[in-house]
Image (cartoon, rainbow, N blue to C red; front, side, top):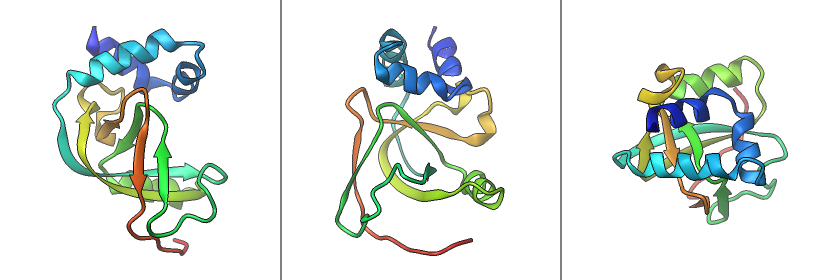
Amino acid sequence: WDAFVLRLWSSDERLHALALSGEASELAWFVQQAAERLTKETVTVFAVVPDGRVRADLRDGSHLVLPALSTLTADPGIIWGMVESGATGTVLKVHLRSARPSCRFSVCPEEQERMVGDIAGVKLVVRRTYSGTS
């Protein structure tokens, strides 16, 4: 059952928005239960957050909240490829002590997905910011 729920969660990004809006809250509950059974690991993960979804005044010491049950990648090459192909936004590099490896259940295990957080989301503290383009 866990494999089915986690594979479904990774298969379509629209499910995340539906679950958090309340239209599919049961799915979010099942994903939460499945994720809790995964072993926690310490890992560095990456994400591209689209323009407008991260505060423009993001600086050292500021706080950022990731949506509940966010999925990030442990492969920086995935993020580099997204940026090179024209994705715009803020690149996050996050050091996590409690990432849950969901990649073996993913439709694309080579993306090395890790789930973070629970229904309440994840609060991050920004340690360093860099500006630039690729």
